[in-house]
Length: 149
Image: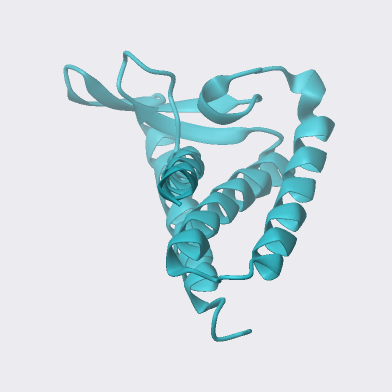
């Protein structure tokens, strides 16, 4: 079983590490640059304290405990789900590794800071981070595989 879950754990750890490195770097960098750094007219790095879920949805400090609890429960349920998969296909393991890495990265922020660090700003979309992207990409890949099966 350990061998079959290697793709999950590699994806999980790489996505989590990348998320942590980028959040730490941009938090420090943007705090020194008044919270914003313009790159192009349509793109900048903007430090945002996100008290909600991905892309700033449901932003409210009052649901902090709920979001931490929901994240922990999601991590556990997804992990048990992949353990129960009859076919441990690389595609599923990769998509769930992205999802778990993203959820865990944001969970660490919630516990450490009381909010999630967001910094990628396209100006036509809510500010987000790589963990949010990993979660969305993982979910999309999962549903693509489901539709093709």
